Image (tube, one colour):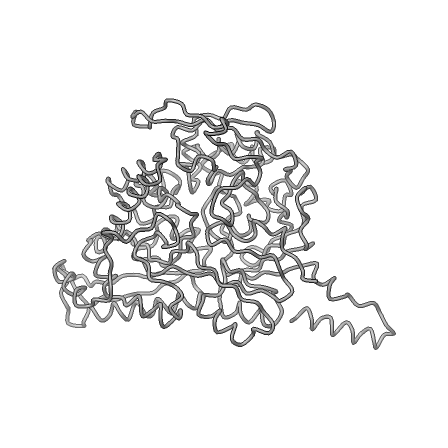
Amino acid sequence: MIRHRTLHFLSLIAVLCGGLPVPSAMAARDSLTIGITQYPGTLNPMIDSMLAKTYVHGATQRQITIEGHDWTPICQLCVKLPSLKDGDAERFPSTTEAGDPVDGVRKTYTLRDDAFWADGTPVTTDDVVFAWKVGRHPDTGVANFRAYKDVLDIEVHGPKRFTMVERKLDYRYPSMGDFQVLPAHLEGPSFEVPREYRHRTLYQTDPTNPGLWNGPYRVAAIETGSKLVLARNPHWKGPQPAFERIEIRAIENTSALEANLLSGSIDMIAGELGLDIDQAIAFEKRNADRFTVLYQPGLIYEHMDVMLDNPFLADRRVRQALILAIDRQAISDRLFAGKQPVANTSVHPLDWVNTTDGVPTYGYEPDRAKALLDDAGWKIGPKGVRVNAKGEPLTLELMTTAGNRTRELVEQVIADYWKRVGIETRIRNEPARVFFGETVSKRKFTGLALFAWLSAPESLPRTTLHSESIPTDANNWAGQNNTGFRNAEMDRLIDATEIELDRDKRKALWADMQRIYATELPAIPLYFRAESYVMPKWLTGVRPTGHKYSTTNWIEDWKVAE
């Protein structure tokens, strides 16, 4: 390790210079350097939905509620989850936006007395109300605007207690879901022009301001595109984290990430944004004496978003041909030793709502793919590339995150499979910050975008599949339905599932959603990923969840082994 080499160099100087004091190995471990493959496009908790930001926020920006290791809601900033049984949640007659009768819910939370922003300001109901104001404004462009829009009112009972009045009694009602809090005492002026908020927020213009952070750490320094340095929050009242300083380095090339670990430039590689499983398996074989590798299957859905505005891809037969032409099982077996199961839909087999009943599946059937393309009017041209009646070639652009060795390899394999059925592929990759921050979120890709969704258990696909969630310039790119999928029956099922509290009935609705998804293919399912956490032997307490809430939400439990 570089750190160890530095200590050796200092020891040599001490010998030559008469015994100068040398830092101990334990003192050197007052800091931890983590490698990840992406740098966040923004640090604002409500803008965009990049995993790199989520990873940083786990250590610096706590939410009112999250899902825990047992995949059920838990409090972070609150004291207790409300429930209908206990009386701190209650139904009331309400209506949908369309005017249909529905049960609403009033649910009361109490914020922790010991929750503080890192400038010493308490976290209060002012921060909750301000976040609601920001999130529900139509010009803000938040990723999950529905989390705020369905809140009809927030009744404030004091600085630490409030009642949230929601339009619909959601099956996830004890949780606050993706509702975030913002420091009202700092962010108010940034929101004076709501449409400019994403650019004027202090998380963008002054990210090291201590008052932006309420977790065990605060962002103390940044090198945009390269690294973030976290320091302890002096006003954090929970268990004190072991490390004075955390450095999170973005190294987009996974081969370089591995090299930095072996050289000692970083101490660990985050499983959430690190080596793909094939690299991790090979790495473990060579370095098991120095590092611990944990493998965690989870709700990570690798797929290709399809740009449905592209007239070539708007034809369902073409989308079905694309998946039939790929031997996804061979990709899983040969690249991932069979540890990453082929996906039929976006719902993971570990999630209790998963079903295979009546859900179309797609094996490797190149002849069937060719027949579908023939039927759709795409005939083999003189150069082996299919052309339509206008003579246009069936050329599709495929994009992913540049530097991710495994994804780039998968791209090449997919392009080769498609070539065999007469589809030409043009690969164009971008750094993750650009790919997610601009190209995907603003629907600038023209063909297919290869990436992963990381979700919570039983995560309703409102933001990714409901037609109201299509990002546009008019809504300031709010929502995550990047494909432009519009399906009235899917919209109806999402709306109905949201307010269905009966588990059996809800599972039946989920089954219908999965059947539509696998038939219409707004995205091409590839496989469900497993995360691989590569850590030094001396680090303990890192506990993967298998869902979207990262290990850093429990960073105060990470320790240096005795």
